[in-house]
Amino acid sequence: MSEEFNLSANQLDALREIGNVGAGNSATALSQIINRRIDMNVPKVALVPLDSVPDLVGGPDTIVVGVFLRVYGKAPGNILFLLPQKSAFYLVDTLMGKSHGDTEKLDFMDESALMEIGNILAGAYLNAFFTFTNISMLPSIPALAMDMAGAILNVVLVQLGQMGDTAMVIETEFLSEDDGINGHFFLVPDPGSLETIISAVGVE
Amino acid sequence: MPELIRVGMADYKVGKNPATLISYGLGSCIGVSLYDPQTKVGGLLHIMLPDSTQARASDNPAKFADTGFPLMLADVLKLGASQSRLVAKIAGGAQMFAFANATDIMRVGARNAEAVKKILRDSRIRLIAEDTGGTYGRTVSIDLTNGIYKVKTIDKGEKEI
Image 1 (cartoon, one colour):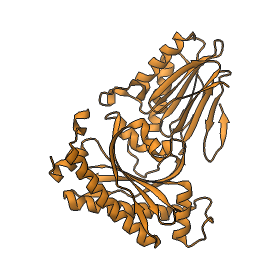
Image 2 (cartoon, each protein chain N blue to C red):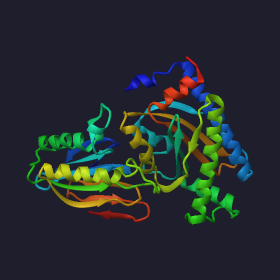
Image 3 (tube, each protein chain N blue to C red):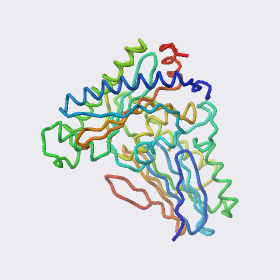
């Protein structure tokens, strides 16, 4: 199954660049919503064993808030925006105009606000993808859960698990200037989608 | 200090008293424990998917209920357990995200639970405790000194089954 992941250095670079622009779009959108500067790291594009994916966000029993969107179109996949619990509360405080530390659990409105953030980030991200690849990708409505990172990542990993033992992950970390918010944005193409994306970019 | 043995996703470990087998952050996955109360030998299997025949070939049989369970069973028997004394406990199989039009893959938790129960029946091993379903993650552990299976959740605390 690994042949489809035999990417050249140039192809990995191309994916990283697309991820970079996508995440840049998303970071700008988030920054405008909360009126704070958002920094991001250079996206990681990596093929990782399924069981080590939870370690990317602090281990399988770390409590996180996850916003999940399914991506439809010619290159289907999944988007997962993960925030450590503290960051999610901080982001809710910011969005809802509350003092920091006010949010201690998520009510319906808070969840709705976070899902909308996930929606906006995903839209901004996929737009960049479209610009590069001309592949139109549409996000589903978002779903949210607050739980152990391992349990939340399960949703994505199970789908990949039917096809193989590794996940191609395009991951970016966001960080707000006051360090209150850090989040991980994952795009996990379905097996097969990667080929579509790579051939659309036209890099060998 | 008894040994704490970590079981990763799509993996299994076996051991004997004194040791605790633990697996963190199960969502739709299932943690299947086996325990022989007399020899105090047991195992913990963390499966992701119900059926290897519906998936592409994998290098990792422990990912599936149908291929993972026989491996764990063989290993606990090797450690001195007796199949007739073995008892099973299972936990996990949640649906983490509620979608209106849940596809098969979203309901994989329930299918995992069914598959595990069928395999236990077919192997004539008694299932004596179960904590499956729901919409929340679980961390599970089995203490091989007494066979107590602990299920830890974020909102509902910890319970022993």
